[in-house]
Amino acid sequence: MKRNLLFVAVCLVSFAVGAWAQSGDVALEFGTLSAPSSISTTNNFQQSLSGGTYFGFNGDVLIKHHVGVEGEVAWRTSQGLYGGQLPFRPIFFDVNAIYARRFSRFIGAEALAGIGAESARFYSGAYTNCDYYGNCTNYESTNHFMADFGGGIRLYAYHNFFIRPEARLYLIANNAEFSSSHALHYGISIGYTFGGSSYGPGSFR
Image 1 (cartoon, rainbow, N blue to C red):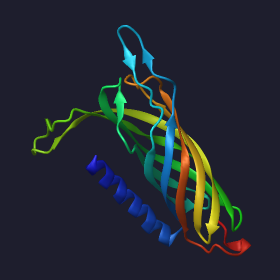
Image 2 (cartoon, rainbow, N blue to C red; image 1 turned 120 degrees about the horizontal axis):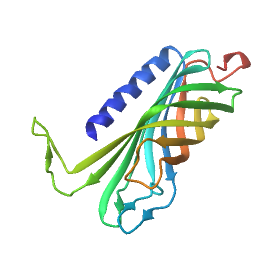
Image 3 (cartoon, one colour; image 1 turned 135 degrees about the vertical axis):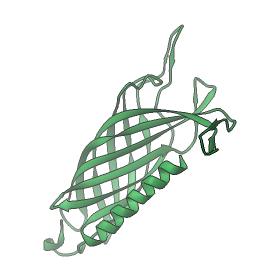
Image 4 (tube, helix red, strand yellow; image 1 turned 180 degrees about the horizontal axis):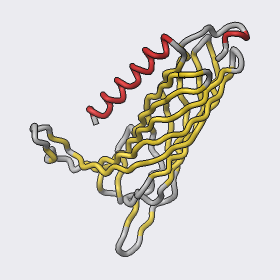
């Protein structure tokens, strides 16, 4: 997990550096996940992805006019219990095309779509999974490709600082461990818009 988070952090720093030269946004997000209920039969159990508090980072750079590239990572802050017994934690990564526009000093909007992955970590409690270099973890991961679609409304509270209610639909391929191939991630981000001035009708992107 640390290596994945480091990779994402580097990507977001790159977004921020690009944003200084052009325009873009960086934000911290807080939310939750909604998905169909767990499925339990005689020979099979599939956990629901619903519930839990999610924390994450996201950022974007607009390359041409209102169109650009956006990236995000979000993970469940506390471990859930798979079937009431096995601790687990879902993590979501995605890279998207984004259309973002600020309409006034106080409001903006964005829409995005892209691809990514769901990584579900199942924790054993003992550091037994070791690689060639001797790095060990106390979990096993199942990874699934996904597509995502979403958007949000930016409410500028002070200069270029904004609060953004947002939602994303995750479409997860072969998500056999869980009860559904789709989940809705929704919440609020707190962020900052780089590039341009927050004043004057000619300055809005």
